[in-house]
Image (tube, rainbow, N blue to C red; front, side, top):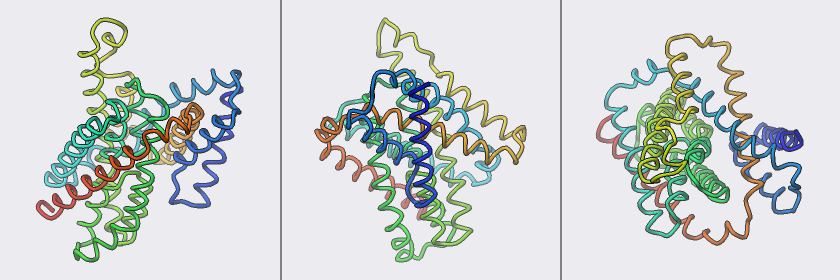
Length: 319
C-alpha cells in the first residue's frame, strides 16, 4: 500500500501538469517525477512492493484497456493504400531502428524499446514492450525521453513542412498519424491543418497501435526460441495481457463497449500507464542513464527522420 499511495500521488501531479500544459504527456512527467524520487534517495524499501506491482500488473492492465481505443471498422475504412502505408512505415522504422541501435552499442533490449516507441505509439508501446524484455528501467526512461523529445520537434516542424509541400488536409493527417510518436503529439500536430486532418490522423495513429499486439507477440516468440531451456524459454507465445488487448479490440469492434464507457476507460488507461511509468522512473539512476546519452540521442534522431520520411514517401505515392 505505501508504494501504491506514492504512485497515486505521482499520477495526480503528472495529470495536473498535463491539464495545465496539454502538449506535455503525463507519462513523461511521471517518469521524471519517479526518477527525481529515486535519485534523491527517497525510495525506502517499504515502497518497493507497491512500486513493483505498479510497474508490472498495472502496466499490463493498461495495455488491455488500450484496446478500447480501436474499432476494426474504423481501421478498414482507411482503405488499402493507407493500411499498406502504416504497415510499411512501422516495419521499416522498427527494423531499421533496432538494427542501428545494436550497431551503436546500445544493446539489444534498449534498441528494441526505442524501435517500438518510434514505430508504434510512444511511451505506452515502450512500457508494453518492457513487459516481454529483460531491459533495465533506465532503458525505459531513455526511450520515453527520446519519443517525447522528437515528438515535440515534430509538432513544430511537420506543419511547416506540410505547408511547403502543399499537402491536402487529409494527406497531412495521414502523414502526421503515421509518423508522430504519441497520440497527444499527433493531435497537436494535425489540428493545425483543420478538423479533416485531425480526424484522419487519429484513426491512422490508432491503426499503428493495432500493430503493437503482433509486434509484442513476435518478439515474445523470438525470445522464447532463442532463450534455450529455462523459464524464459517456456513463456507463452502471446502474453496474457496481449491476448486481453486483442479481446478488448474485438469487443469494441463488435459494439459491445458502449460509447459512454470510452471516456472513463481512456482515463483509467492513462492513470494505469502513468502509475506504471512513475514506478519505473524510481528505479532509474541518472548517472547510469547519462552514460548512453549521446548514442541514444543519435539513434532517436535517425529513427525520427526514418519514420517521417518513410511515411511522407508513402503519402506522396499512395494517398
